[in-house]
Amino acid sequence: MKADPAPPLLRVEGVTLQYRTNAELVTATWRVDVEAGRGERVVLLGPSGCGKSTLLKCVGGFIAPVEGRVTLNGHPVTRPGPDRMMVFQEFDQLLPWKTVRGNIEFPLRQARRDLADAVVRERAQRLIDKVGLARFADHYPHHLSGGMKQRVAIARAMAMEPDILLMDEPFASLDALTRRRMQEELLSLWADTRFTLLFVTHSIEEAIIVGSRIVVLSPHPGRVRAVLDARTAAGEALGEAAARTLHDEINALLFDRLFEAGSGI
Ligand SMILES: Nc1ncnc2c1ncn2[C@@H]1O[C@H](COP(=O)(O)OP(=O)(O)OP(=O)(O)O)[C@@H](O)[C@H]1O
Ligand SMILES: [Mg+2]
Image (cartoon, rainbow, N blue to C red; front, side, top):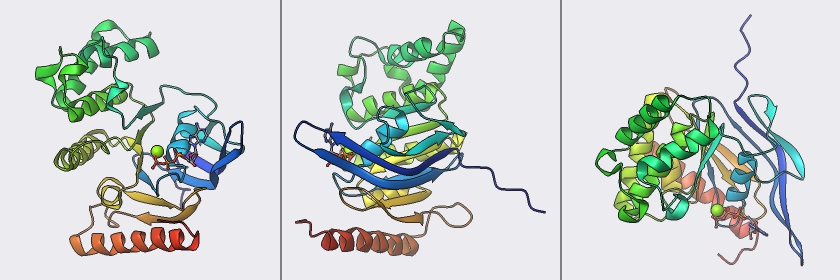
C-alpha cells in the first residue's frame, strides 16, 4: 500500500475576507482555497484589487477570515508569528536608524531570545554574505539602492528561518533589470535551502519565473480561477515554448474574466 503524501504545509480553505468601512462592506476574497507543500513556490497572481495582499496578510495572521480557515503545519493561524515572515513592496520597511546588520539581527534577537548572541551574529553575517551585501553591512538604509534594501528585507526574513516566506510584490518598484536580477537571486537562495514561498505578483512573466505553481485569481472579489504548474514534471523551469503557452493561457484566463466581469480594463 502506498503511504499518503505528506499533508501540505499551508492550507487556505474556503477563505472569505472582508473589510468593514463606515460606508460599506468590501469583500476582498471569496472562498479561496490555496495549498503550499514544503519547499513549494506558490504564486498568487491576479489583477489589482483582487485581494492578493489581503490574502497574504491573512496567512500572515494580520487579518482573520470571515469564513474558512488557514492552517500551517495543521495549526490554525490566528495571529502573526515568526514562522511566517513577510517581505513587502515598499523600500521603507527597514528600520532607518539601524544598519544593514542591525536590521537583520534586531528582529531575530527579539523573536528568538533563546539564541546565543554569537548564533545571531553568525546567522546575520551568513545571510548578509548570501544576498551580496558584505561591503554594506554597516551602512544605513538611506545609503542603499532600492534593490539593496529589498535584499536586506529578504535576508531579515530568512534569518528568522520561517516555515513560509510571504512576499508581496517585493520587486515591483525596481527597474526592469534589477527586478530580473532579484528574481534570479531569489531562485538561487531557494535552491540553497528550499524554503516554502508564497509570492504575490500581478506580472505573468514574474509568476512564471518565480513560481513552481501559480494560483490565478479572478478580479474583485478574488476567487481561484485556476491552479497551474509552472515547472516541468521534473521540477525544472519551462522551456521557451512551454513558458509562452502558459503565458497565453494565463492571459486568456485573466482577460476572459475581466471581460465577463464587465470591468472597464
Ligand atoms: N484597509 C482596507 N479597508 C477597506 N478596503 C480595503 C482595505 N485594503 C484593501 N481593501 C479593498 O480590498 C480589495 C482587495 O485589496 P488588496 O489590496 O488585497 O488587492 P491586491 O490584489 O493586493 O491589489 P494590488 O495588486 O493593487 O496590490 C480592494 O477592493 C481594496 O480596495
Ligand atoms: Mg496588493
